[in-house]
Length: 346
Image (cartoon, rainbow, N blue to C red; front, top):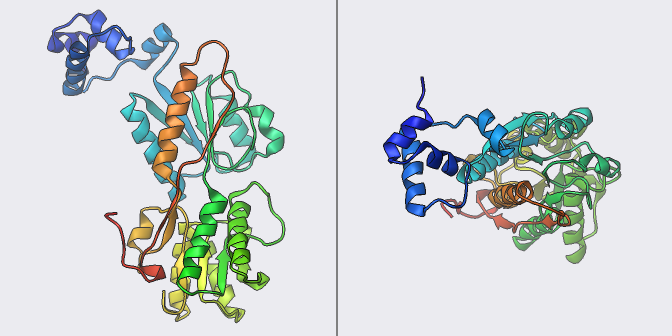
């Protein structure tokens, strides 16, 4: 049998009521008393009964995170960042995958309250503007990603267009002019998608540099999949079509890893023949050969902001304040694939 609240009270030298007050985050506990209780909880590895706690306070101390797929590096690392941020604030996280399916995304939102979650962080990819009303929940919800502009919830997103423009400008600054893009279709697609927002940044950078857009350089992936296989296949086709190019902007690092593999198989040297930059700054991009330059969109900051906003909504009383949109800062991380020494440890 695991440690009980009685055990915590005995080790901390306080009453069971005081332990309960600390667990439920009541404000009128002296700091030194709170510290003793917290130390006892950690020493005993005590885990509060969230069900009983929820019956008393109306909260469980657990939030949800719904993402398309944990097999995608970005979302796996985002989940890790969210879990860390939540743990620092005394919250647990229940993670689920929607696999990018519209019905599963709608179900994730609709079922967040019945599953006794205090609130939900939600990253949809299939819902459109017409689904904004489905986000009008009787419960705290914070949206992640690009979908549902102007909806009824707080929204934590990226500087997709301006950061992509900066990525292409990085390639221009090292003298590249025939810059291919892997991961978007020049004609068509959802205007609010990551692909089109990043494509817009690519086009803007070329326009400001006075470079005409060559449609043969813009390559979608099969089934619009942003995985290694998609990046490799699009790069092989680019070479086999005998298109002249000296750089590639991959719309995710995962695509970029496929790009690096395909370039090597085609006998092209990186960065001498072709410079490559990705997007997301996933851990794997540090360890590819060569290490891959990338856009860091501020994933840890996204997690911190999202968790804090959700906590504010959970504790909100009375009339709700209007929804807000937050965009963390981004940075370019130059590495070997664009001719720089790796800057990690940065």
